[in-house]
Image 1 (spheres, helix red, strand yellow):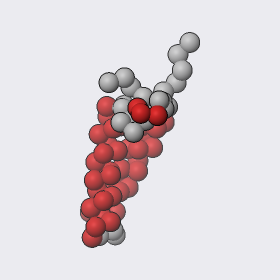
Image 2: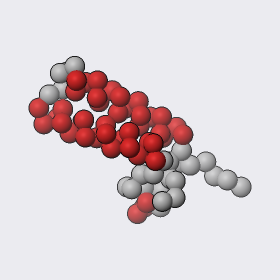
Image 3: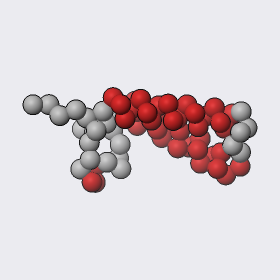
Image 4: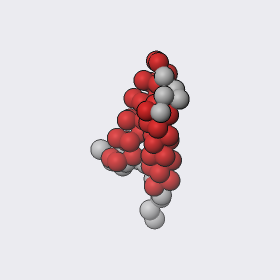
Length: 68
């Protein structure tokens, strides 16, 4: 897997994941929406740690800095 996520993208995903997880565990968001956000938060954390987003790959997107 070639990395396709830059540091800013990774930080934003991690912050959003933390917010989703806090909202779920403080019972601010419950039910199906809470579960969806919890799963999305887990995916965001996983993708930010491995620096690869599978949804970027088919479209050829990358947020990594260009190396000259």
